Image (cartoon, rainbow, N blue to C red; front, side, top):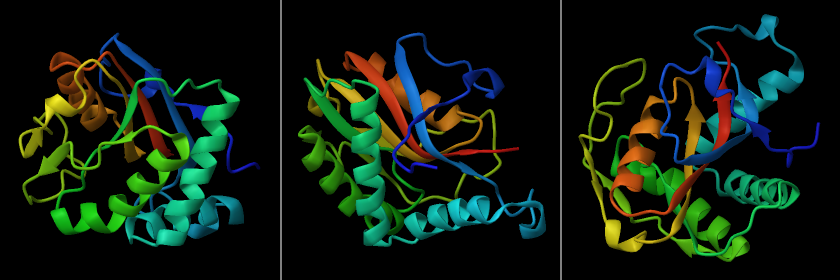
Length: 192
C-alpha cells in the first residue's frame, strides 16, 4: 500500500459530535492497539504500521520526515490548497513529549507545505495522559495563542484519532477563537 495515500476519517464511528465548521479529516495508517490486538491477530503490514506509530511517539526524526513527506503527497493528491494555512499540532501530555514528537515534525512539514509553522500556538501544562478518559474537558491544560491563527485556515495535526474527543474539543476552541477553518490530519486512526 502507498504510504502517501490519505484516507478519510470515519466520523460516524466516533463518539464525538464534530463541529460542522471542520473541513475534512484525513489519516495515513490504521493503528491496532496492543491492548486490543495481539500480534498473531495481525498481518505483518498491520504490525509494521503499529510500530511506525510507536517510533513517531518515541521521537524518531527519520519517521517524522517520512510522515511529513507522505502527508505532503497525500494532501497534493486531494488538491489541498495551502493558501492562508498554519500548521498547528495538538501537544502531548508533557512538554518533553511534545518537543520529542512534534518539534522537528512541525518544522519540517510546515516548511515543505510552505505554510506557517504554529508549533508553539498551543502549549500544555504537564499532566497525566487522558488515555481512555471520555467526557472530560481535554483542553483544560492547554493555552491557545489565538493571535497566531486569527483569520487563518488551520491544518491541525494529532498523532492518533480514536474517539475524536480531543481533536473535536481543540478544533472547536480554535474555530471559536478566530480561525477560518480547521482541516484535520492524523498519523493513524485507532481500530477497535
